[in-house]
Every structure is written in structure tokens, then in C-alpha cells.
Image 1 (cartoon, one colour):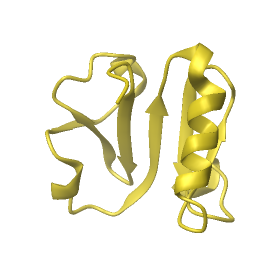
Image 2: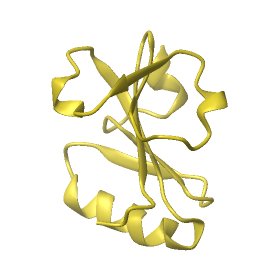
Image 3: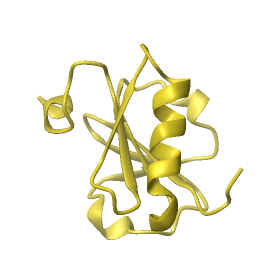
Image 4: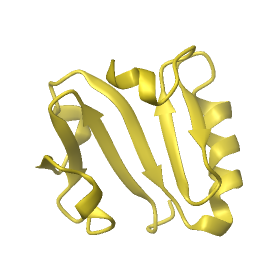
Length: 95
């Protein structure tokens, strides 16, 4: 696994990140820390995956292949990939 990958799980009340997450924390207004996403009992609306910019397309394709029918990745192509429910869009996951 690439140790440069950052993962955030967003729910209606805030954002869960691992305790070692240090990237871009100012953009998340209500951070909650966790060492194990499996222990999060809140309803997760989307995941945001931060990857090295030059590997965005590689991870986008990997996520799309592995989560086909379960979740869909979306990306701006600049190292950030949102993973959302099929048929939704990123903004709609908050409505």
C-alpha cells in the first residue's frame, strides 16, 4: 500500500480521519479522529481519498474496478478522489 494515501470519511456531522492524518486539515471544519474506520458507527456519506497527484488516474481506475456496483469514484484529477454511492454526485451526498 502507498503510504502517501490519505483517507477521510465524511458523515453529516463532520469528518473522520486517522490519527496520523496531517494533510489539508483546515478544509474539514469538524474533525473526528479514529484509528479504525470499521469502528465508525455514523452513517458515512462519502470517502475522500488523497493520493499523489501523478497517481490520481491509477488509483481512480483501481477504485472503480474494485468497488464496481458498490461505490463510484469521482475525481478532479489533482490527487483527490471522492468515493460515493452509485448514481449520486459529490454535492448530492450532503443533501
